[in-house]
Length: 337
Image 1 (tube, helix red, strand yellow):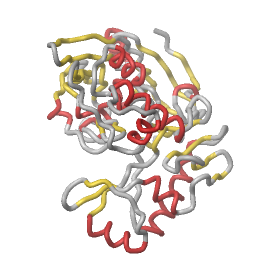
Image 2 (cartoon, rainbow, N blue to C red):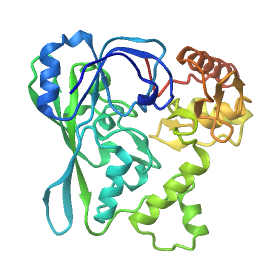
Image 3 (cartoon, rainbow, N blue to C red):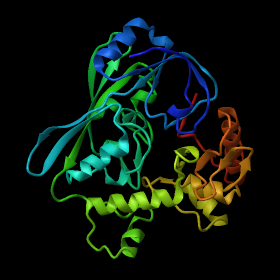
Image 4 (spheres, rainbow, N blue to C red):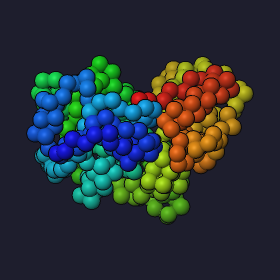
């Protein structure tokens, strides 16, 4: 464990923004994490996981603690079900692939989501009709001040759409060190109704898909629409899909009859932010090296040397133009720092 000074975070955030950390340390064990926390005041810390859900707009005048805890294991199982655990620093997609290699079902629709296991509950990540909370059992998290490790169950986490207690009441107070998931071993529940999954299965001639087939379909769809952060800096979906009242939706639909939606309740629907941005004429829009991706308008990208503030200004333009056209507020999904 080495404390580094004036350290570039360009390779530690998927947008590839070149900002500096005043101090940087990578921890690979619980004891190392405790040591760092003992030496550093809680308000002088910046916790960094996979760097996939953030936009860095300035240098970090704090100690950046990179969570590199690894490991995955089976906690308990029956003939039909299993509880598995992933350490906080495990790459999310690699963890999903591991569960699929064991023929454990539940996470397949969330294949290829960027980030780490430890940050997945913070955002209540989700994709293609499935959210993390659907398989979540519990997580262990360390209090940054007391160093106590506390277990949070499903109810404790107060999960919402791309939201949790860790983004609100407990923000910056805990570091998630491991997460447990409840998965199926038999009679897997297949979710193929969302997005283009069924179309992909039909094209491949798959009538009775396995969980591996679902994962492959999701990966193919994501790769066809979403840029690889290793090639073009991005953080995946930049905005949340807005939830609006059915009354508002019907009013907008009078002018835009093709506006898609997904039912949330009898009173509310979710509309795709990417569709709104596209209809606002912004797909492929670019200002310098900051741009709206040409294939998926929901993704903002760094074509090379864009600063975090340039990406942020572009995001504000997107919000402004969508609001002017549809009177719908877009809320960022990424954390602006």
